[in-house]
Structure formats: structure tokens, C-alpha cells
Image (cartoon, rainbow, N blue to C red; front, side, top):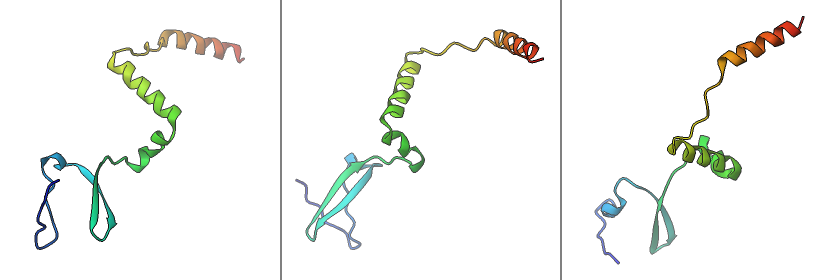
Length: 91
């Protein structure tokens, strides 16, 4: 337990452990406040954390990238050949 004295504006310092960190301040009651370390997820990315299948796919891809296991580049020559064959067959 640590004792701190609030300044004239009601501010206290929490120490280096909390430096540059986001915290949640929960007013438990009139005499108690709970401070919890937190991470903030941007609203536009929250869907990913709500979708376990999508999150698993992203984490798998990141693991593969870290291990330098990349997909092979597309075969452009084969694609051009196939497109040509499809165009010839459309007549």
C-alpha cells in the first residue's frame, strides 16, 4: 500500500509503473477509487476482437509473416494465357 497526498487540484502521481499508460478510474464509492491499467482499441478495429474467426485468421497470418512464410506471387503469364483462352471461347 502506498500513501499519496493530493495537491490543491486533487491530482496525485501514480509512479513510473503507470507512466504513459492508459488507465480506467472506477469510483467504487465515496471513499474508494480503483485504478486499472487498460488498452484502448480504436472503434474501427473493435469488430475484429468481437469476431473470433477473423481474429484467429489475422493472428495466423501475422505468425506466418513473422516466420517469413509468404504466399507465392501470382503467375501473370498463366493468367494472361487463361484470359486469352476465355476471350477466344467467348466468340
